Amino acid sequence: MLQIAPYTACFSRILLGRTVSSKGIAYRRFATAGDGGGSQAVTAAHPLSGVRILDMTRIISGPYCTMILADMGAEVIKIERPFYGGDETRKWGPPFLSQSKDSIYFQAVNRNKKSVAIDLKRGKEVIYELAQKCDVLVENYVPGKLAEYGLDYAHLRKIAPHLIYCSMTGYGSVGPYAKRPGYDVIASSVAGLLHITGERDGPPCKVGVPVTDMATGLYAHGAILAALLQRQRTGLGQKIDVDLLSTGVSLLINVGSYYLNAGIEAQRWGTAHSSIVPYQSFKTVDGYLTIGAGSDEQFKELCQLLKIPDIAENSKFKTNKDRVKNRVELIALLEDLLAKKTSKSWMQHFDGASFPVGPVNGIREVFEDEHVKAIDLVKTLPHPCDGNVKVVGPPVVYSESKNDARTAPPMMGQHTDEVLAELLDYSAEQIARLRNRKVIE
Image (tube, rainbow, N blue to C red; front, side, top):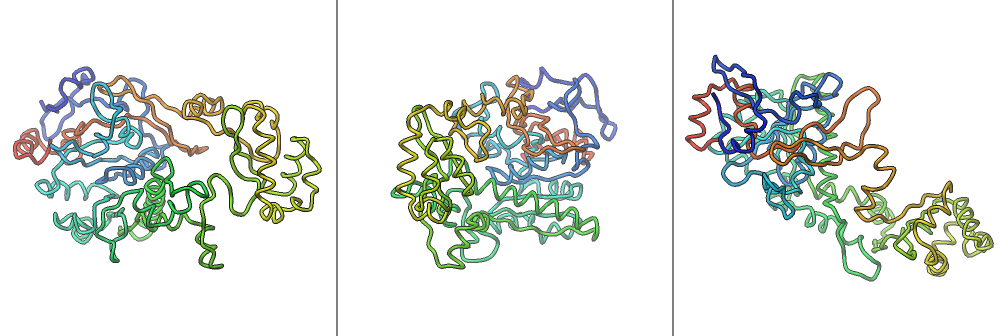
């Protein structure tokens, strides 16, 4: 009978009462949150049901990409470094889960996956076998690192020509920065995003979440879907390169276009907008309220509700061009008016207005918001050691397909034996030998 030794204490509560045969060897399979008990499982309604992904990523960009694909039903096999704690984000805390000691950070981007602990150097042949069984491989190592192990695209395309190989790097595979390690805030700095973020007279500032990492993951997931579609026509895989710097520069959108086509160097605007006024946050009695008047008609309506209709007809503010030119005077007037009531009072006052308006919520307020609750965005998933974990579910809803959070982020190496036995048909003796040789954990 196979054992997943490192987690016997935690997993003893969730052993299934059945055996699964592999080469005539019977073993007990450990349950995951997607097994039995009425919990959700991948079905034909999931658009990526039947697609298998070898996930050799860690930190944020790669795991975020593969989580999106897993939500759509792909089987994601997350390869983690054994004996060193696996994905680095497992240690990014506090806070940590109380029993498994994994960081709560890790829980944010790793649901719906299986964790397999394999040493890439010693276990190269195992990775080869897994690659042959997978449709997609995603990795985010510094260019050249996987080539040292014979796990780069040049090697794998020979043994798995169907494989879609997605490399996610900091700066791409060519160019003078190619060998630099890629981290969100550094790439965002080089890409100019920090330069345009922050108060007008203040220092550069990063966004509160790793937006460049996440956007790179989004680009990668779309590219992978397109490559899967193309493979239906050609039967062949291909290599995809996605990098943080290119993503960051692409996120400059209008700011980049202003420089490229008009030679205009950007500045920081805080919550304000360079080309639309008013379009920013305003202080209220108890917080901040963000208001956007994207058209002259919306500005007229705002003035009417604020009981200053004459301002909308003033030649200094009548058109958006006028308002941008006389920004300082208009914003000072609006700041004085909006500072007299609470954010909630203003939201009630503006209810039904055609212009967009919303409070600047704290995180508690976000998850207590009536609309966030009504759309059932937060999901609770059973965890093998810690009872359950809460995650923010997929933001995309299909009318005819499933896209859902099904299983909690895995514990380190939770599925090593299961994947090797079920997918590669390894016997108990083969798995034991690999463990003794420290190929797997």
